[in-house]
Image 1 (cartoon, helix red, strand yellow):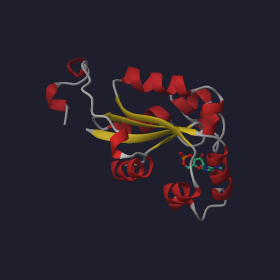
Image 2 (cartoon, rainbow, N blue to C red):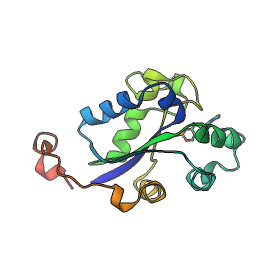
Image 3 (tube, rainbow, N blue to C red):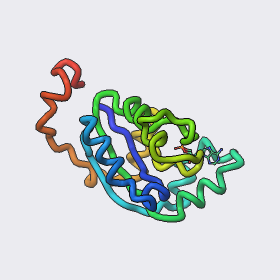
Length: 154
Ligand code: CMP
């Protein structure tokens, strides 16, 4: 199975949407493998957003991501990265589809509530940046027989 790193960004924490976001991923059938609150450091943000470092919005993005703590989670499922990105919606939240997290709860392209890993490879890098291996749990989800066909689980 694949894992995706989710951050509830400072605006999501401020707006009391942590529970709503967890609720959506739980109801979908994804498995929560790790969860913690933390303040992001310059070192983590420079790595995290390395692909945005030359963009005009980078300094603002960094100070926003450092302004308050974030809630970091690791969610697991078959093709979880793509599934979660669909549930999150596009960056510019006011144009995100209704029914997505950004589409239902946000208006801004910066204050868009949530980060979700772009690819499985990036997810592995982000997992290593945020979580110590002993913070990641591989508990058995008892309802998998009703979430996937046996041949779908890989
Ligand atoms: P995300 O797509 O998760 O990752 C990059 C983040 O940078 C994005 O969410 C926004 O929070 C922020 N961002 C992207 N584009 C802009 C922009 N044009 N202006 C301000 N912030 C942006």
